[in-house]
Length: 240
Image 1 (cartoon, one colour):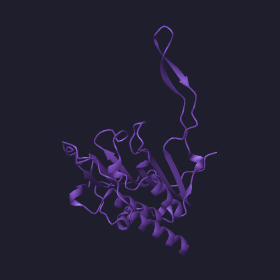
Image 2 (tube, helix red, strand yellow):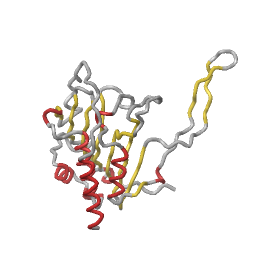
Image 3 (spheres, helix red, strand yellow):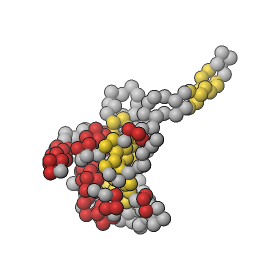
Image 4 (cartoon, helix red, strand yellow):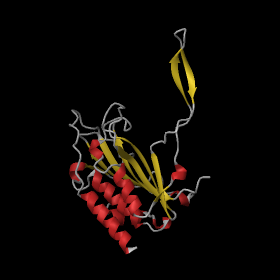
């Protein structure tokens, strides 16, 4: 166990010194202030210069590794390990700590949600959001720690990748032009392509990650996977 902890500490130290990726050129217009009710605990990045997207990710990994059991996941524990004060009402969506990057349009947030009616649905998550479509815009500004960095850190902590939870593309309709020049739709069969989600577990602690290419355009060569959301909570039951 001591050797495993040493490996995890070394990996996190390595991530802390990883080379940063270039930040996109600032936008001409600043992001308008979002409603406080939607973004509690909102901070401008220049107010918390030490809390970069990569630093937030490293602290979230430390939180994950600190959980030996699911029932240790509490708001007090999240705030203590991450050294952050989350603000907002308890429940769902729950207290948050938000950092906004006006120049790039990105903001990233730690959230903690819980429900008295569903005690097994308590979770903490780190989200990377954008004022436009977060599924399409360039992610370089928030991808200093990419999916592979999170993946390797979780494996070093002793988490197991849940291959039983891999989800593949479903059947879908695509348009085509028939011999008469009319547009019709054809049902395509399921594809053996996994969707951009990854799940892990260690005991009853589960982690899920959603990711996408750094640049969404299919012709771009900047295709390394970047994390859009990572969450920790109750491990999912095995899928038959």
